[in-house]
Amino acid sequence: MPALATTEESRAAALAEVAAVDMPGRKREQAGAFSASVRPLTGPVLDWCCGKGHLARTLVGQGAPSVLGFEWNPELVADGNRLAQHYQDPVTLRHQDVMAETLTWPGKVHGVALHACGDLHRQLIRRGSAEQTPRLSFSPCCYHLTDHEIYPLMSEHARQHDGALSIDRNGLRLAVQETVTAPARVREQTRQISIWRLGFDALQRHLRSVDSYLPVPSHPGRLNAGDFRTFCAWAADKKRLELPENLDWQHWLAEGERRFQQVRRHELLRHLFRRPLELWLVFDYAVFLEEQGYRVRLGAFCERSLTPRNLLLDAVRVSD
Image (cartoon, rainbow, N blue to C red; front, top):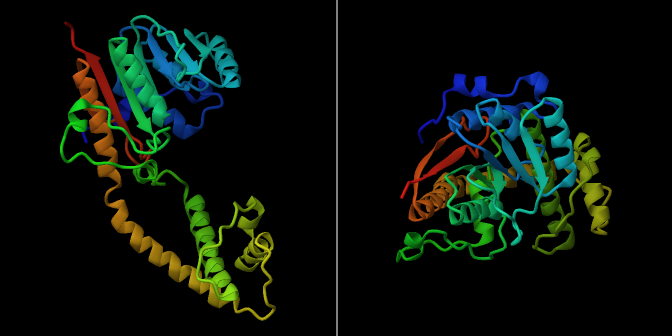
């Protein structure tokens, strides 16, 4: 996948740290890389699902004359407008449900979205192209967040293809099951909890003499600093299961480790299809936009180490 901006260009485009109030460092870098990848910016911009307007303010620094942001959370809108006023950025955020039928589309704008989820970025594609928006640039995320149980392809070409893939909402999760951005501490903690849960699952099957899964709710964060025995005591209490006094905790912890390694091996094959599935979805978006009269550029706006959702579609409407 071609890179749309160099590392140097991305760093130079990011907001200065002193101006990146309430903006995590990774998000600041992502917004900088996105902004560098969509230059030049020659007209007003619409920031779709804008949050506090961090991307909007970054785009202003890269030449956008003005940015209008749509965001459904009124608290984020208020905070974002205060930031824009404080730094005198030509950014205006508006409380707006982008899925509403009553949404009024602004005039000739450049629609952008950084990691708008599922149906939210698909709404941008559909509404933006229907309004003959001059340009749409977006990085999709969370493809599985949709109201459709069976995912409907967007492009006419894909829908009419005899070998078109049919996939349900749960299957779409595969495209985003990746944690390359998580800190090492978080990855190790996730691994530990998975082992504990699998160990407890093996234990409860043995104690109940029932070889079936017993759902355990989300655990309180305080247990992360504990040990396997404490976790099992908590889980057993939640499921009203009595634990014998003479349990061999090391045995059941080892069983959790063994099952964790087995699950990992099974996932390796499944995850071979993760990126191809994501590309299949994004290519469908690209073909749909071409069918609507756009010239589409597809590439990576940053390294996957910064975010695994690093694909960006940049669609420019071809003049009649």
